[in-house]
Structure formats: structure tokens, C-alpha cells
Amino acid sequence: MNPAPAPGTHSRRRASYGAVVGVVLLSGLAGNVSLTWPPLLGARPVSAAPASSSPAPPSVEPAPQLIQGRVLDAESGAPLRGVAIRAGAAEAVSDTEGRFSLQLASGQSAVANVRLPGYERKQLSFASAEPTIRLRPQAVRAAYLTYYGVADRAIRERVLELVKRTELNAVVIDVKGDRGLIPYRTEVPAALEAGALGPVIIKDFDAQIAAMKAQGIYTIARVVVFKDNVLANHRRDLAIIDTRTGRPWVDNEKHAWVDAAREEVWDYAIAVAKEAAAKGFDEIQFDYLRFPTDGKLSAARYSRPNNSTTRLPTIAAFLAKARRELGPTGVFMAADLFGYTAFNPNDTDIGQRIEELAPYLDYICPMVYPSGYHLGIPGFRNPVAHPYEVVRESVRLIRQRSQHTTVQVRPWLQDFRDYAFDKRVFGVREIRAQMRGATEGGGSGWMLWNPRNDYTAEALRPKPLSARRFTE
Image 1 (cartoon, one colour):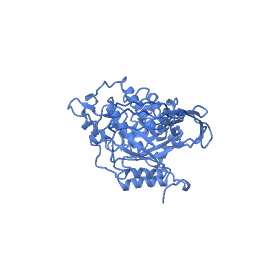
Image 2: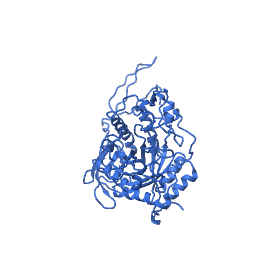
Image 3: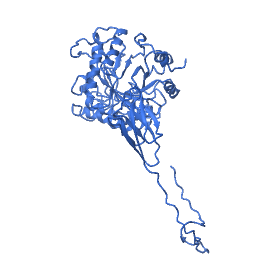
């Protein structure tokens, strides 16, 4: 996920009907009907007996149901605009007064997913024709668990202990990691064919996710999209090809990339995301949702031209499809973007521009690590010396440029040593400054990134005893 990758940092889917042959004897049937069957050998035709004169009552189809209601902020009582209420294929969006009308099909269950970025999502059954729904604001504060970290009991429990004791209330878990590996026994056919089951196989993965949710932990599934060693080497027809070798093209970290323009690649990532949603994750977060930035770029061959007119439509089309596919599951959808997208009017040469991507997302997650801003930002040439200003200005600008949507901004913060400037340690002061910048820039929470899952506990405020929902 890092704009300027460095070692150890975040660079980032019959019944056969046998013919039934029999002899039907009819007696006492309603209607004055005479049935003539081809006579059996030596038999006479059989006529139906006279029936009663009263006609059969017509069948009555259940009438469609119209659900009308209102959505309010549970704390302030203010009406909420842009809330998505979805039951099956039926979907409604609340207006400026928080009102909505949901038309259900005949006989359809009135169980709906209610979702608005920045608020807890709800699944509910409408008990009345005019319900009032109250949503509670939610600012997610997460720590990241890598592909190996979530499988290591000591590391996992160390991070979960921080969630128990501190202001953290969420975890981001690699579901499809940087090399394309999945840490549980996936049932996605394409993943099994590609060999996405690697050295990590968590047998009780579903139980772990269920336990986290029972403890009130918000769970985010990180799905890496276009950087995938496993798929690129299994399906070279889907890979970016190195014109020098004819093999899958790799970046500076020796990670192979698949072709962003291939819809089979999209379907694969979306299938993994849908599987994660079915396991109970609250949010799907797409990473490496871009074109590559380092390595011998001139040697990379794509199925279509890679230029300023093709990149952005490609990334936007992926998100549009993912939104359609994931919508019925009720999960939130997020994407990790380069920090510089806040400042650049173009697509940053990777297919990411705020205005075009925001309508498809619930959360924009910019990687605002000060070490990643190798050119600084306006007014601050040395970003690692100004972590508050870098984060605040990045979040503020993304909020400003996405205000035509309901998307929220939740940035990734740096909790690792600088690698681009003076190698300084990012400690309590720098981390707290970033947190303050995220809040004052208008962000909805934040996430901490450390490639070793080793987080600065002293930078985290203790969780009030009343908020602890964990079993001691």
C-alpha cells in the first residue's frame, strides 16, 4: 500500500424429473368435466362423476407490501439522508428528512439490511408499516493483522488484547493477502484451482470471526485485488506479462501483478469478498486496487493500453461491479487509496481519482503515512516532521472532493519507523498527532498499519470499563 515501497512496509463463486405414468381415478371433482383417455385393451372409456354446482374459489395472490419509515441518528435524533435500506432485490434510500419507501414483492420477507457509512449497520425485520429506525454513530479504530499474524496465536491474542483494553474497536484481517494467499479453507473454485491455500490454514477461522463479533469487534476483510503471485503464475493469460522474459511481470518487491482490465480477475476478487461477507465480516476493504507504480514499467504488457484515458474507467468499472455483487450482503465496501490522491487532480497515474471512485464506496481509506509523501505536501516539505498537518490536510481534501456522496474517510496511519527521510521512530507523539489530524480533518476513525503487527500500545487511550464487552 505504500506509495514508495520499502522492505517490510505496506506497499501495497437437478433434479431430474422422471416421467410419472399412472392411472388417475377421478371422483367428486369440482366442475362438469368429461375426460376421455385412450382406451386400454378391452376396457371402456371412463367419465367423471357429476360434480357440485358451486365453483372453486379463485386463488388470491398476496398483495405487494409497501414499507414506509424514517431513519434517525440514535444520539441526536436528527434525520439521516442517504441511508440504504435493502431487502432482497428491493432497495430504498432515505431522503433529506430521513424518510424512505420500500416496495416489497408479493410474499417477500420484510427483513432488511440498513446501512449508512459512519453508523453501525443493522439487520431488522419490519414489525410495523411505518417503522422508525435509529442508527448509532460508529467511528472505527482498527489495527491490522497480516496473513501470518492472524494465524499466529500469540500475535493475534496480543492485538485482540489491545482491542480489549484500549480505544481500538476493530481489526483488519488479510483474507486475500499481498501474494494472493487465503488463510482459511476457501470454497471459491478459482482460488482452489490456482492454489491460493498456502502455508497458513486456520481451521477454526469461522469460529474466530464469530467470537470477535460476539465481543463487539468490527471486522474488516482486506482483499488484495491486482497484486497476486498465485493467480498470475497459475493463469498467465490473466497476468501482466514482462516483454523481456514472457513471464508474469513483477514489481521491485518481486510481487507479480494480474491485468486490471481482465474481468475474470475482477470476478475472482469479488468471489473471495463475497465469501468473506458470508463469514460475517462487517466490511470488505479492497487494496492494490490500482495499476503498478514501481519496477520496470516499460516492460509491462497489458491486454489493453495503459494510459490516462483507460486506467480510471477500469478501476471504476471494477468497483461498480463489486458494488452490485456485494450490495445484497449488507457489508460496507471500502478501498485503500494513495495519499497523494487527495492532492492530485489526475488519476495519479494509477487509476485512482476521488471524484470517480467515491460514489461506489462506503469508506475511502487513504494511506496517509507521512513517510509515503516523498515530495512532501504544499507547505510541508518534510512530512515526517509534520504528521498532524499531513494527515489533517489529506483527510480534509478527500472529504471536500467526495462531498457529493455519502462516503466517509477513514485513513491508514503510520505505526512503523520512517523509511524515506531520516529513519525516525514513529512513537507516541507522532501516532497521536496523526490520530488528531484524522479527527480534525473530518475523518470517521482511523486504522493503524504495522507490517509486524507490533503496535505502540502507549499511543492508545484506555477503554472505559463500561465499554468493555469482552469475557475476562
